[in-house]
Image 1 (cartoon, rainbow, N blue to C red):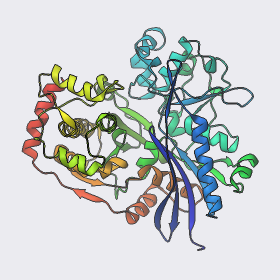
Image 2: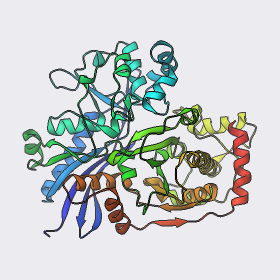
Image 3: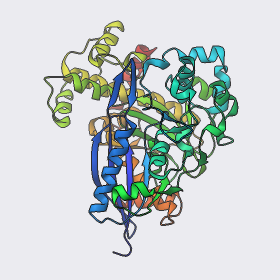
Image 4: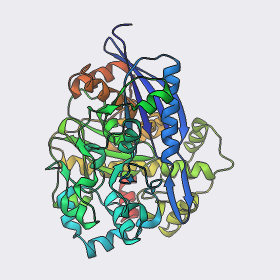
Length: 490
């Protein structure tokens, strides 16, 4: 037992969350899911909010379970989705549940911000971040324009993982990878930019101290110790942005890889030593987010399984099992209908099925009917979009990309894994499914000195998991489909 170490990971996505214990023993990592729960949006008063207290309660539940089972955890780490934040009053109290990035208050705010505050090109030159209407910068601007009471009274602004760590420890920090999603951080100075902060009426002292992944934030407060039955367990700043933790878990043997973190969102990119900020990256709307050990995650956000998840909620006649549903979709002829997954139409429509059918109708294509045709349309289109972004990545990479690693829950989708290999023309290695939790755990292990650098972490991961390999097939067919895709999405 002496050489076993246990780490507690909280992994929160935009639709669900889980707590996981990772066990490191003799260079092998194993995972056990402790709890799993839904993450619900709350709609009220014309806005969408996250329930930060419900999420905190779920973290406490997981910690109580670990204490009851007498699992001697060495530390705790929390990762979440990006951009969202909580306002904290000068008495240390949370001022309100945080607005969710899918809230419509940011619609139209980017253009208004560029016209009235800082020019678009300058914002990109400072941050190197992809323009999306829900980036923290535009959320804060919308709140400022709307006279938001929480923002007006905010002594501190804490990103979601930092807020949950604060609720556990009483310590207010600003973790680097999550801060980098905000479009307010300069990757060259590795600090929040004063001009951008000032443009939304904030100053640097309204954010916590900047910490890098694998830093100890503090220990559980006496209140949390009493509630859970645990002692003064350290809470570690992992890569607070879930993609940052996921990329840390890519089981690559060397640097000649690209990654696709596949879940509700798909994030495709490469790891670089420095940020890539130029006219070319600005034109393609690529992003430079903070990675571990000073690296940059140069990537592009792609609408991922959101399309499929939303349609599944609407289909009343589709099989409940993913395997059966997808098998039916594979009986449909390929490429009958192709969409651009990143079209604004698919951001948050009342009906995703209607939105997909409407797109196909407007582009003069076969209008998919029924779950099988629509599912096939989604998978074909995602693989073709991946091909487009992969082609752009190759233009930026200073090395040949020999392998595409697909990590996250979407890596279990073997049809889409194979389509991605076919479309991009490179070997695809799928796994680990729990990439984010694994990265979270390995960064905790790094903080306590159990592992050294990123390559030692990746070797342990590669030795501990089984990856599935997909080699390109039917390339002529996919090449023709890609030419058609380019015509449709023009």
